[in-house]
Image (cartoon, rainbow, N blue to C red; front, side, top):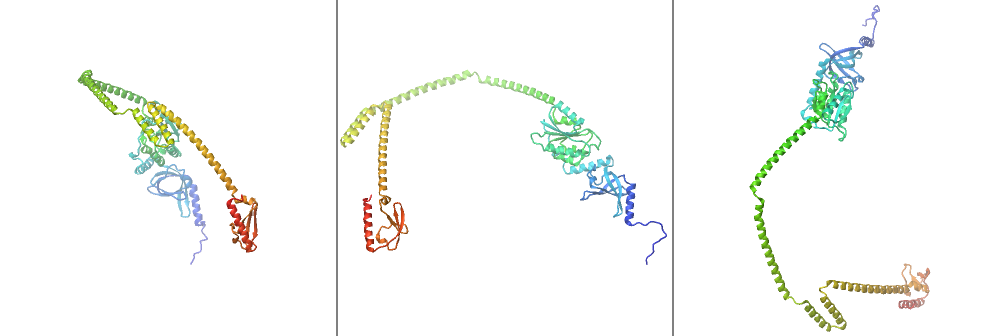
Length: 514
């Protein structure tokens, strides 16, 4: 059974939506700008880019939302358990009847919270091995170029340049960056990676990352995770000098060497030139003293050994005498050997016959042999005998023999050339005669005198009348062309024709038709 509405009450009625949106307007009007301090919890970045979290303290909690456009502008990175102060406005989510804080900006709630965040980040990066001692690189003794990453307008770069010029002037490459503010961390990271990406020919041998003193908030760009990782990944040895001597940032743990001040970083980067010169002079003096002492020791030792050797001239006397004795023996032995060879030569020469007598005997033998041969050959032998006699007379003059042989060779070469030319001319004349004869014997010349040649349909010459039958197609070749014909007539006619053809062939063979 339904109850009728109370018409006597003057309280206005609201729908659920009306009441929810009315509450939303009331809260947003009353709390349009608030600052809330608490601990971040249950942080979640949605795929849309919005951040949802809870801000709590010991007794209460409130939902918090940070839209995507504001997340990118936050000065700190939201982390679980981080105590922060959020600035924004209170609103509601009518679908669930929840109120929530719309975050517009966020900052750390005091230095303690900031230190806690840095300590947590330090432990996490150390666990990854970014601060391990084995990762640190050795600094070069005297780099050709020094890269400096700092503000171009501050006193830091002037202090570094002044100290470098005092100690050991070097070429300095400045990469200007902001050292505090929202964009400082990104600029420092780009500078570190930019130096590492330079060509080897212009890349600095050492880097200095520096800035002056400041508050913990001012030094925060050097505590950012992306900057720390860039320092750890840097392939160039790097010295960090951030803040005062008591200030320590996370990049100091990741760098290869930490300097207390920017001036101290310049002192660590290069040695003191005057100290090097003094060291070189001291080393040179020490080397000179050592060399002098060594020479003195060697000289004394040499003198001692020389005294033990005695007079070299006396030592050479014995050897000189021995050389003279051996030289005399060698001379006598050489003379004996020469006399022996001379005697043997005289004995051998007595046994030898006179060359003229031997040649005369050979010549007489040749003459006797020539008498037994025909006259032409005997004359040739006589000539050879005379030549041989002349050769025997000219044995002591080989140059004359060679000249006469060259003359004979030249004469015979000319004779051979004349004979060859005459033989070639005779053969060429004979060849021309044979060519003319062949041309005259050609059957085409016979055709020019009125004769013809008969071929069958296959192009084969017909040489007998018996090979022709009545009605057979013939191909007749004349001097100036061909003509077709059909064979006809009696066998006696063909026989007569055959006989005439045989007579003509016989005449052609005998050359009577030419």
